[in-house]
Length: 216
Ligand SMILES: Cc1cc2nc3c(=O)[nH]c(=O)nc-3n(C[C@H](O)[C@H](O)[C@H](O)COP(=O)(O)O)c2cc1C
Image (spheres, rainbow, N blue to C red):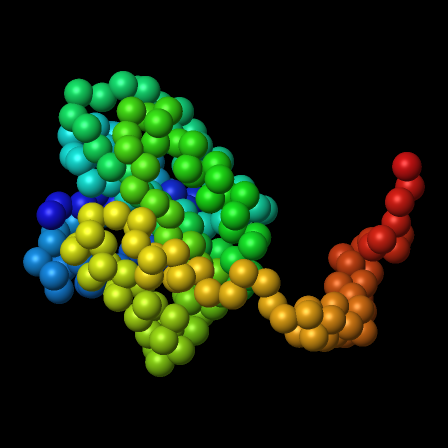
């Protein structure tokens, strides 16, 4: 199987967590005898080749980070240049990854991505979701490998099944929400430590109003 993978992050390849995820996923794909070609939309000079690859191949994955609960606008801009009809049928799948760990915050993005393939003349091949990826690009090698290895496993699974519609792909998201006790603890630590730190930073940057100000 040959797979076209498009990185929809606006971060340049060197700094993109999505790129590291794609590299790990590709290793898994290749270990099962599949091949892939990868395009990064952060590099405008790759757009034409990505467009061509999207239109002429039948297995396509768009990998993207969650940015403010949404798909990055750079990716939306690229998608808006694609025709809604195609001569060659294709399956369009997604890898949606994020910084925060809870699966529930990826669900809105997932619903949006589900609606895309039909608009682009493709069949939906599922959505691989996972958070907790903030630190990939800054983590030490051991820690980074620990985060990335599951993506290699999913690359192997994709090479066998050709989509993310399997039960293991559905489980990949992990915890939907943290347990209540942990959520309470996080909220309390934010109130006690986090909020104070944000206020101090805001004051240093010249902010004179409280951060929770509601002037209107
Ligand atoms: C502008 C911006 C907005 C973000 N918004 C969210 C968000 O709403 N939820 C979340 O979990 N992570 C959010 N993140 C974290 C990214 O999804 C995460 O760091 C991701 O791994 C970045 O991938 P990239 O380096 O390929 O762009 C945001 C990051 C940035 C820079």
